[in-house]
Image (cartoon, rainbow, N blue to C red; front, side, top):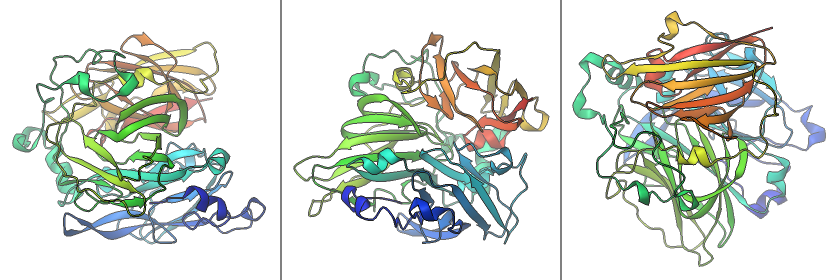
Length: 487
């Protein structure tokens, strides 16, 4: 994972090894960055595991670009199978979006070039094939801003994933089996007896009830993975990141998990300052929710006494947790169990954080020209998930005209929450369960079970843009359609 010390970066800003960054006057003449879809070996709980990965020229995961650096990347497929890589949250031309409905698959041994002006912030990249994303074909994509260069702080990336020793195909077969599902390995409802008043949200307390879900059983986790990873490691052997005593951290959290939502527990007062790469008005707290595909930028002032600071990711509705340790030189490194004493509360259905978020810069005020309701449906048996009652194979695209202001209400009629991702656009959350407000700008929003979220955006490039649930089991069984933008 890419990390920069506050002072070390300022001394070496012209030569960031992880990103091949060079001074602006030379950038136009530089060769494209190199990225390879390949296999690699990691250790999970003392066992070796072969997984996939998106490796840069230095042998690390992912890419970090300097301010104003173009996204000029040569992607090589070193896998024995076809792949397609999506630049999640970025808005390239549709022909470079990395999706199988409009872009040709990348064949084994093939190299393809990408070239567009990127958006700054915390993003990620992943295969758009469910089996490959489950198999960890994903990595951080960090686009640094000039403000990042000026800030006296250290940057830390925490990339989350769920992991199984079984093949991704076996995982999907069990999850999507529906009528033959192994109920003993599934968690189908929220644990009882949870103290929702003690969820550790700091100033977020009192923001509202569990958005219509109080007392109702939700389906939370479709699959019990073997491990939950932070930067490819578990709490049995976590990554320990050297930090300055009393220093300031910008923690970039990316939920690359295929099917798991988490609470990010900072263990100390912190400020949530951006979501999905977009700045928000600082939100204080020490526990923040993150659904699959979402990102959080969190500012943390480390203890002045030099003690190590764990940053934990808590699996919703269960006891599993993972994380990293921020430790000054000489600090005692604590051992942290991979299981909490009790199950963590659900992320799904708790909309307090979403209701509290406010964009730093909202969408411009203008009349809404198109309002549409998008029905989200499905069930555990049979395991089929739909948009407007249809799966991908028989989809009817959602239509919009280029340039018009569009509002889409995601109305979820299922008992699972759905992280809904719209390609090619930034949208603003403007309503949750009937409460209207000017919320965060995002590219992925968690829609609560039996609830609704309305988003607003200005329709972009004339093209079919994917619109789908980012839970890989749901996507694989059909919860995907297109936003068809016409002239």
